[in-house]
Image (cartoon, rainbow, N blue to C red; front, side):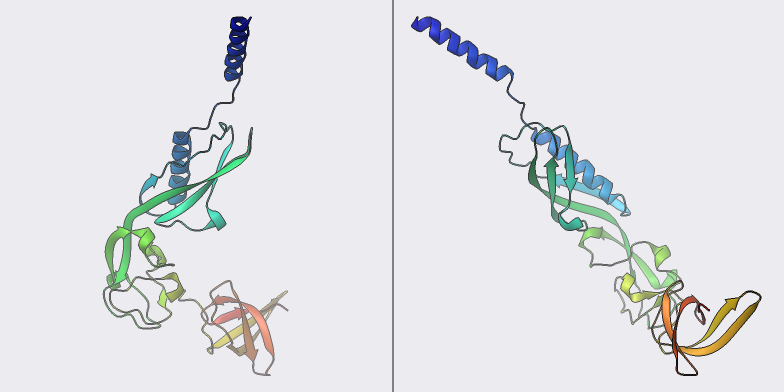
Length: 228
């Protein structure tokens, strides 16, 4: 009877193993994280290199629905975490460490650019490097630099940040502007002073000759349209 009981026990144990849930593959997670970050890096004009550290799994069941996310919707960085979540058939999460680089071109000034000057292509020198190691807000697309106005002094050899650029059709704080109000078959024009710096399409407050402050939409560097 002892031999029969042992046989039955082993048979039952074997049948349970047949129905045990398969475990999640770390390789699948590594591939998924790589693909996810590659899609994120497509917005950067460069070649991405991604190194994913395989996660230490704790016997998690194989997942049918994996999702990937960067904590707090943070921007891409040289070293970062991606949170991998399983939605079904069981729920679990695991953090994954990633090293990332994006080799591409960016631009620095080849001379001192003073505030108010329009930037031309001749004012720039091309550099190549890891775009993720650049300071925040550095512009890497020359079409978003050339033709724009320096909002403040740019020293020789400096990267070009979006916070330093102004649309040349912007209204400058303190400048005189013409306000217009359009009606059915007529236009009312007035003079005033802009109280803020604002780009075309943005709202700006204007103090007119009477002292009244009105709000309008910037049309160009000298004109603000106000509603009737």
